Image 1 (tube, each protein chain N blue to C red):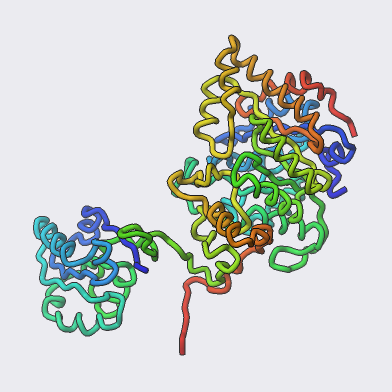
Image 2: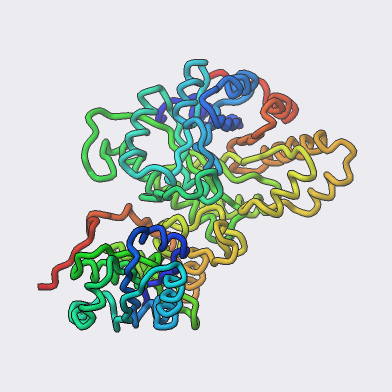
Amino acid sequence: MKAGSNLEKVINSGQFAVTGELGPPKSADVSMIKEHAEAMRNYVDAFNITDNQTAIVRTSSIGVAGVLLQMGLEPVVQMTVRDRNRIALQGDLLGAVALGVKNVLCLSGDHQKFGNEPGAKGVYDIDSMQLLKGFKDIRDEGKFIGGDELEAPLSVYLGAVANPFADPFEYRVDRLEKKVEAGASFIQTQCIFDIDRFKRWMELVRERGLHKKVAILGGVTPIKSLGAARYMKNYVSGITVPDELIERLQGAEKKKEEGLNICIETIQQLKEIEGVAGVHIMAIAWEEVVPEIVERAGLYPRPKL
Amino acid sequence: MKSLTKQKPFDEVIQLSDQLNRVFLIGCGTCATMTKTGGINEVQAMKKSLQDEGKLVTGWVVLPMACDEMTAELLNENKKAVQDAQCIIVMACALGVQRINLYLPLPVIPALDTLFIGMEKSPGHFFEACAQCGQCILGETAGICPLTACHKGLLNGPCGGTDKGKCEVDPEKDCAFTLIYERLKEQGRLDLMRKYHPPKNYQVIPRPRESRLL
């Protein structure tokens, strides 16, 4: 056990884990995010909180994590290397743990060009791999990146992301392996729409035995409309939306209902894939549908550990 | 290798030289000439534009290499016209501007913005090849610098935004790591992609950078 978080306990128990995602607001008014979190209480094992996602200024991940902890909910704090150098990142890890955060997800972050401060200086002092390794060394060796020692030990459950849909495809498993070696205990993947490609990736993962070293949570997103599906297909890098899925939505009378069906079917397929340890549901701007997804996917009630 | 520049908007040059109506104009015969931002033609065009704005151009010169120490002597050769001026407008990169600033007490006004030190790929197409980080990693990255060529300066492989070999930040641009991967594959050295690169030591060359050869 690395930190004894609820997420870690569920994963270690061998049960199919469920995480949700919350996007902080462009204000300090967190009432809406609290409402979403409350609606998902008992339906997810932990809540990912994005870190100024798509490079748009929002309430910080750690700030919202504090709010969730006050509500008795478990956050997964996302930390990107876009906005902070190694001093700030390590300091924020300590701050987050001091608040009671037990899960941290390390990632590069969307480039600042895409956000509402495109003139910002991208920091990228270290990359996501170095962030993971740095945090692992803080936990396991009691040392900061620069080699100085911590005054007291800390525990944290570390995660990373993987995108089985970006290229070069063959390299994506190498990169996963590198992340596992760097310190990732759990992985959340990019949204899965192309389940065949995901299955091929999982085959490579199993060939290397990586599924035994790291808990892979498949990412899913319920699609609300045909427009959203087309947008993701054409404009979101690193996401593959197969034509069949677009056609299926096109043919459906009730698009929302069909989008939900697709999402639930994907989760059911994920449950059957050897080595998939859980699902990460990213229903941004459609949070209220998460309980229904979890129930209909046969993942309710969540384990109490 | 060239110091890449682009001309500032003319209005900005006018605003920077407000109240300074007698001007000596300097171009550069090396990089700024090659990039057509501060050669003879551009200096003459600037002279005309300044005169149209009612400024008096007391003289002009295109120095062979504005950043070189020879600049001191060449400025001396133009002493009269320089002394008649209230400011110097420089159409060279920031190195040229600062070299001239060493020798003259007058306000020095840049007419160009300095972009980067670039390498010419094909005629007229320059790209930034080196971030001058002080700790070269090209030996492990197939001779392609990810610190420079990747928009995020990543060292341990591509982010999740690679799409068909292109970068999500600029779909016209190749993903640095796809290039590195393909090259290492050809060389039979893909094991290098699996190697962990530790954080860079930016203290190797602290800013502002300085190097003494003697």
